[in-house]
Length: 101
Image 1 (cartoon, rainbow, N blue to C red):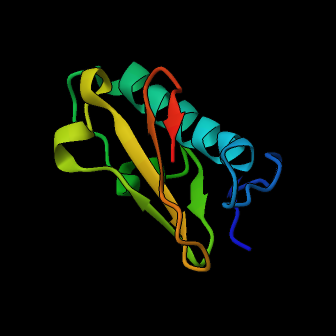
Image 2: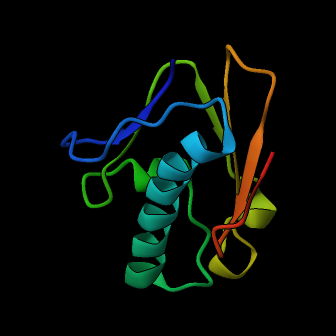
């Protein structure tokens, strides 16, 4: 199973499979993107590369695909998708934290 953790390992593992199991991983992505926008401005485009820097600490596990479309990379338009390669379900979340399969 795939997981997302903070680089320091302090965040619980995130397993893609059900909506409830997806909440933790999405929380981490959303938290790190919000930190980026707090530092750089909410109108700035945030990327996975930017949140992988030490200041934000994002780290994805093998087998987990995370998508942030370019037109969804500012705070006002934020949306993310997460899918594990062993699952057929793709989950989507907006900045408010609403998750849909």
